[in-house]
Length: 199
Image (cartoon, rainbow, N blue to C red; front, side):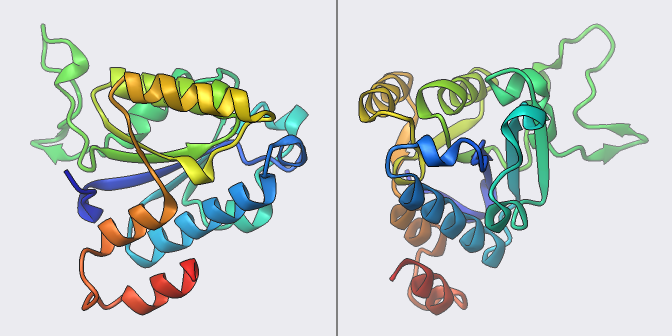
């Protein structure tokens, strides 16, 4: 299965200025996150950011923060614990009520996201990124983690996160894989601008 641009949302987890200097290969990780956000903007994919305890850890790097449509401040390591899952489910009005609101006597996992494919990347891979991705799987989203835009303070922790994510059925991809799957063809009107970002 390939990524579908019209079903995708991008979630960028905790690229905070006070955290990034400690991340293994931090400059490359941040550069790939910025590339992802720029590509998403070009292709009209919604971009979400999260920040872990921003009063203590600061805000996301400004070059990334300006590309996020919304940024969720959180205290849970998983952004789902602070409401990300609900935000990713776009409400659709039907007869004066949200399509996502449960019917009387029915529980709320009847909700369906308008864009159920969540492309996610972030720091630290073995903590906030991992817990967010696993909780999104539990919320029945289709989760794809962009490995070259994720980082931890150590390679061992980062790689352990990838092993666990793969075991949970999460698709592991790279920034270029996302780009070319979103585009699908060299005749796409945004092909050259997107290609320029990854050259």
